[in-house]
Length: 99
Figure 1: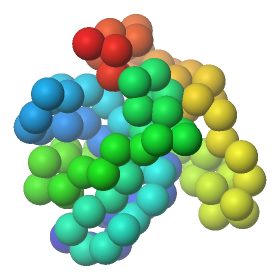
Figure 2 (figure 1 turned 120 degrees about the vertical axis):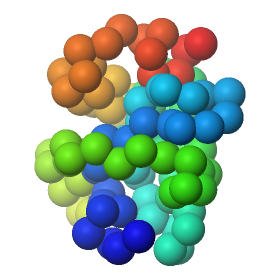
Figure 3 (figure 1 turned 45 degrees about the vertical axis):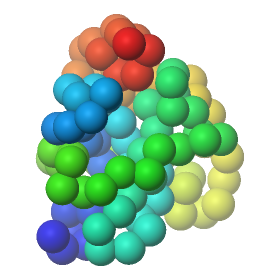
Figure 4 (figure 1 turned 90 degrees about the vertical axis):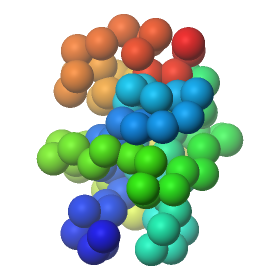
């Protein structure tokens, strides 16, 4: 998978594990195989989840505002993450982490 697909701020959903079908945003790229993701509910900005990219479905949407804040080392809040995910996929909390 190329770094063009693995991009900070990209919307992803889990394909495997307890969090299957939940939506997240990529918070950090650890290496070619792993990223850290957040949902602002169960996986908060202070405690991102390490996920193998093989277990993620990468979506086209990138939250530019959040990606820019992360790249500038500015603080991103859980509320911003939740609102961004809700705005893109139109789902409530139970679909991105609180299940």
